[in-house]
Amino acid sequence: MILNGFLAKARRGAVRAVMAAGLLLGLGACAMMENHHSLKPLTPLSMPAEPESLAAHPANGAIWQTGTNVSLFNDNRANRIGDLITVLIQENSSASNNTNTAINTSDSLNAALTNFFGITPTFGSVAGNAFSPSMGATSGQKYGGTGATTQSNTFTAMLEVTVVRVQGNGNLVIEGSKEVLLNGGHEYIRVAGVVRPADVTPQNTILSTQIADARVEYSGDGSIYSAARMPWLARFFLSLWPF
Image (cartoon, rainbow, N blue to C red; front, side, top):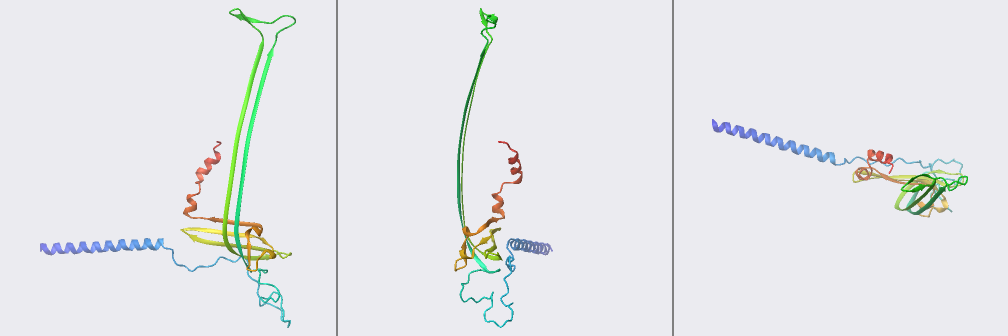
């Protein structure tokens, strides 16, 4: 009887240990599934402009139709809404400024009353020495300040943009963006501006320095960017600190 009771307790202990191990394994699997990004279908970013239809042409019997994708004399450079252009972002900027200020001022004031209607005025005496009504003051100020600032930026990337509008003079209004998920954070690149069709190369590329009214943005979010950002309370007190 004693042996049977001992064996029953041992079996119950083994069952509990197996259940606990299974529960721990399940929790670990759930944690791994939560940390792992689910493989959801990727959807492209919305296009800023839809391409023009190439099949919507009047049935006038002519062999040549304007706006078609076949060109006998021109190259295949982007010139219509919806066409794509590769922007080669090559932004290099540097600026420096030096300031040196020096101020020196000195003042001197002397006033004395040595004669009043032929009488030399004196006021009292100490140890046989009389005081005459005279006054003198001297002041001086000196200030010096220096300042220097240097800034340098480099940004190199490639981005495919879309022609969203054709202006009356033929210039192309472009716009495009890119989103990259890297190390748990998103990085965004956005470009917008106006380009001349003559500046677009036969390979449909253009430098970012040839874009008029250009807006080139590079930003992101995530733990890396949050670590480099000053907390809002520290920014608040820093804005009020006068020194």
